[in-house]
Length: 249
Length: 138
Image (cartoon, rainbow over the protein chains, first blue to last red):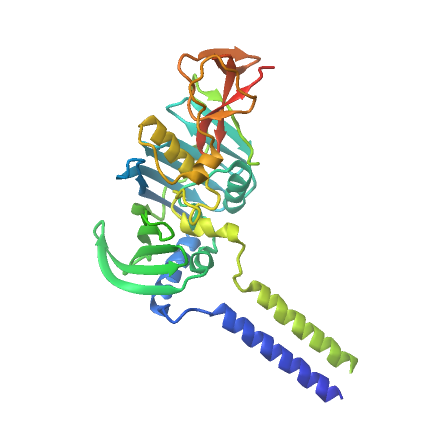
């Protein structure tokens, strides 16, 4: 009797464990492990950085009512000091804005509109980004790089992965990766020598006939930037007015 | 016997706990992965929480007369400014992406209001976007 129960327990364990393993590695045959390996090397490396700064140039493809495609450009400079400091400055025709997080408060500042808003914030970058998104509806450039679990987030529902080849982005030789999941294709270019940093990222919405993309080109990676506190603290300049955030409903 | 039962229960529950770790991630995590570098598409696929970028794009579009198509998500998040019906008071809490023409700055109790067309507006951040909401000065 004892033996039977034991056997049953072992069988159940093996069954469920193998099911778990199958689900965990459930990847369509189109997924090339070489591609996911490079992606993981990149996300692990960026996730391990204590500090970094990067310049990004973002292109949002859009459609005019009259049918023509038009690109909207936003550049963003981001500096991060883990675990609890972040500054992101966006400049462009659609937005001009600086986000500050100093470990205690987060501030959003529109220099050209001369307004800012401040809120008490949680104690880490990750919690603050969650808070900003869920409670205030804010997005922060490169937010997802900061999350330590970027890899599973990116790989979720991926049905296709491929190493397209090699390309040079901003003078850096990169591996060109292509991934696909229902509704979305994304491409990442990761440096293939030295630090495995991303240099370009393209997300294409395949769920619409226009197949519009967002393209981000990254440059000026610095994994040892100056991170003096003053860069993360907002001091309102003369004449700048304090406003509030509209809570997310 | 009891020990074995215990072991089996623990084994099975452990297995199920592992199962829970399999990335059946909540859908809300999807946009982070996709909108990685700080910009978000306005479509439902990428911008689950169709927030900032779509709003930003929309604001820019209206500013530049470059009205963007396929912005249902953004439209839902930020109602389009009501047609310039001067002199018609709007319900309190109406959000517009730009102040109507001719608004006059009117500070009340330390808060900056803008008065025009029978309405008081107050600047607020709705997500990353600066908008104006009709309010009753206190």
